[in-house]
Amino acid sequence: MKIAVIGSGLMGRAVIYDLSRAEGVKKVGLFDLNADSANEVAKKYGNEITTAGEIDAADEDGLIHILKEYDACISAVPYKFNEGLTRAAIKSKTHFFDLGGNNDVVHLQFEMNIAAAQADVTVIPDCGLAPGMVSVLAAAGIKEFDKVDSLRIRVGGLPQNPRPPLNYQMVFSAEGLINEYWEPVIILEKGEPKTVNPMSGLEKLEFDGIGELEAFYTSGGTSTLPQTYRGVMDFLDYKTIRYPGHCQIFKPMLEIGLGSRSQIRMGDMVVEPREVFKKVLEKNLTFNEPDLVLVRLTFEGIKDRQPKKLEYEIIDKQDNRSGLTSMMRCTAFPVAIIAWMVCSGKIDKRGVIPQELAVDPQLFITQLKKRNINLIIREVSE
Image (tube, rainbow, N blue to C red; front, side, top):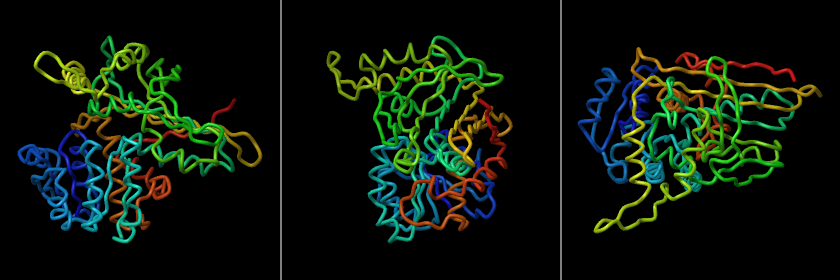
């Protein structure tokens, strides 16, 4: 199988690392607007089957020309490119997967379902960590019940050694972080989708060995889960985990407009507050220190007419041997696994499909374990 990767940033590097070592992969092509960056990443994170080239992710005709040579394409560029990349992949009859993160873009991708099915390709958006891995884990846990009443998903990428005042470091793009904190949040309540405000619903929680943490609503993490499980369960939500105090400090900065795209004039210049805020975050929160990823899914429901509560948990720490952060591993490896599963014939559904309906959860969990991302499953007694 031959797989193309668009984007040589943090997540693209981890995708290249994984696919270049995956069973049955014959060629991995890394493409970026910056050809020098693509070549450098291909040499550092790939191997003898890895090649590199130049492409503008907004150039659909150029993408079609390149993708005709590949069985699948993975987008590791910002979500704004994914609509055009999806069109290019369908036209070139290439399976397509991305890291997602924006509900509006994903909605546009699902409108291409018929075209994808007619082209005999599989398109699965939102295949990162959250959205992404957690959707497949949700499908796995739901199978353990006769009826699920509620599912609470909590995920966070954190520095192992937090620095005040925000106790956070950049573990993925600043644009993605602001989007999570800015866009509306979709949950299920009484079996129906409901919109709630981001950075609301603050709660406390703990992880063994980590200590006390906080979690609050952020956008995108539930992906297609509210629609897939509408009427199936009463309650479903997603919150992002941070160290205590993060929300209290960060939220007011957004409330005064630092996440806005509305331009403002400063003397002779016109600036967009979000662009300025992104640069400030990148400059002041890029520490390149060891990170960790925390995942917890809590299911409550009925099994054999008895109440049951189940927890799925992952505590993953940076792998210094590979040079990959925990966030890179936990975000990029899932999309690489899903692309590999489709190209291997282990997923044969065609069209634009939610991953919770397309991916075999047990095979996926087995593949995570091979990459030393270990899921702990425990039944909780009340």
